[in-house]
Image (tube, rainbow, N blue to C red; front, side, top):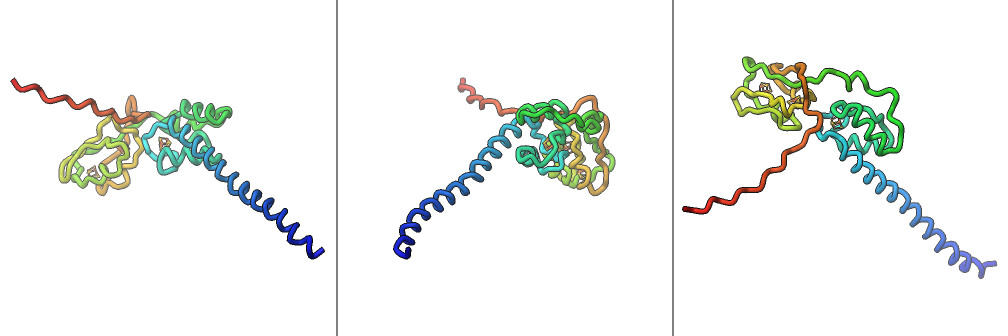
Length: 189
Ligand code: SF4
Ligand code: SF4
Ligand code: SF4
């Protein structure tokens, strides 16, 4: 009996090692799947980084959706089209309770009251899409074509001179324009 103990140990040990490998392997596979799904979801989000979904940006929201811990309809700038895209990627039906209130809200953009602006630059630092033009101690202005209406610039303004106003359109899908190719210098005459 005692002599058979080392033999039993030799049989059980490899099995324990295999089990340990499997237990380690499974979560890794799951993490890989979540990362891939996050990338796919992030690709169809508007990339305005406006945080209206309640997350710190598009990628964190995509990750939460990939983990299945959050509703599919929280991206306000993306609206119903993005919600449908997310559902398609997940192989699910779009939610019947679409975030209609936010999705159907009239588009808004930020407007700065030039008479009250003190040029403190705080709004520029808060804007995730560089939609505010200005310099220290100069009047600032919002570039309507870039503003997504996220409202992130409102709280930092010390004189409350930024408001959101109705706009016929907002920039729902932000994208940086790729810089053109540098022109080669003109040949000297
Ligand atoms: S664009 Fe959509 S997903 Fe991205 S931060 Fe804004 S609300 Fe969230
Ligand atoms: S200007 Fe204000 S509201 Fe417009 S995108 Fe920038 S932070 Fe958002
Ligand atoms: S935060 Fe307000 S006061 Fe400061 S630059 Fe922007 S608009 Fe002007």
